[in-house]
Image (cartoon, rainbow, N blue to C red; front, side, top):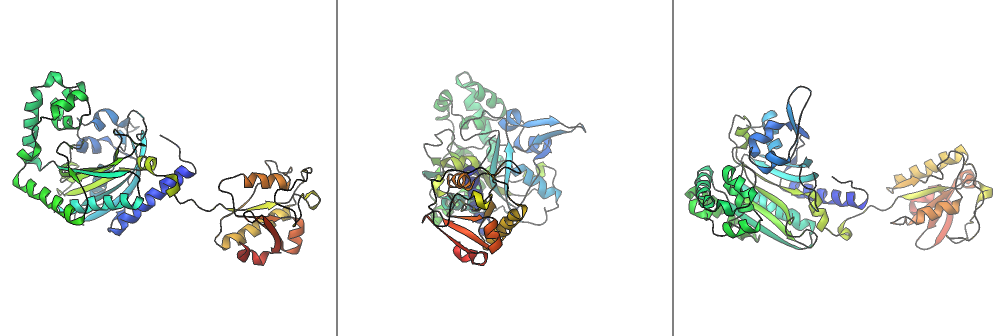
Length: 442
């Protein structure tokens, strides 16, 4: 859980803008689901033996004695929303979301307990072309983002339920022969979901999984054909990939195509290199009590992790607003129109600003905003009656980064003449103009 201020928030918005733009180009529309859902939504779809349900969910009993959960992932919520909003007979649905998620994990670089994901879901299309569309959409998004470092796409197939069942039995038999050599986590998974052992990074497990049976030996002909279409299409689209037979997804609803995109970057390291992951989840809506067993496929990407690898220089930052400074009093003016920006005259005592001058400053700011320039009336003090001299106001404004290109100054004299002083901070010049000429001057 972390705050985002200034550049961090601009970077976050930049990533989301490109993600939303890319998804929109593919015909996807936005969806928003509640942060809090009934716990059963995730327990029935993710699997009670998954790490998310078993160890990571923020779960609580509410005042009506119902178990509720802070949303740990987006796909199950989207599937529930399709049922709730009676969209099962309005297929296909192409949807995207950007939502905060919550998992009680060990916080580390690139992994937080509250994090935001951008995700897409294509529901209602069983053909493997939908898998290819989602992979291509995610690849285009990361390329448009110009993520530094090498992007590596790993794909695999988990086959249909028949293939998965046969492979689970084979893995259970194989790993059962090496139970005492497995890590504690893998010994637990052997009894719940042996597929997850393939995803272990523990050294002792890696030696054993290297010789584990290959999934391809247990795929049905239909599963082979599905995956062959995906790989052939990716070749023809020019999207480079590596088939990784050890790639599995940790949630029970996945089948057929699964994939991950890793970013080879010093910022992330190996353990947190995955920046996008997805897969097919046919039948997820029926797990939630829907009237139809709808096919679906999608992916999600962690915004915070992408922000770690993105260079700050790639992030567009808005131009700083034009400050309107108020001269406390004509007698207290430290500079004249022909004086340099950083005059050396000593500050004079602060003065009270007349209410009409404040109103005039607000009018000037309003006119500047009409020219589509951001503008702020600079606060002259933390007191209603004691105001900083102009030199201190200028020093405060010019010390900020990025420095504004222009500064507008007003006081009683300027108000009487319907004029303003405009300072160009780059050229180190200033001139007095009519308020009607502000647009051209800025």
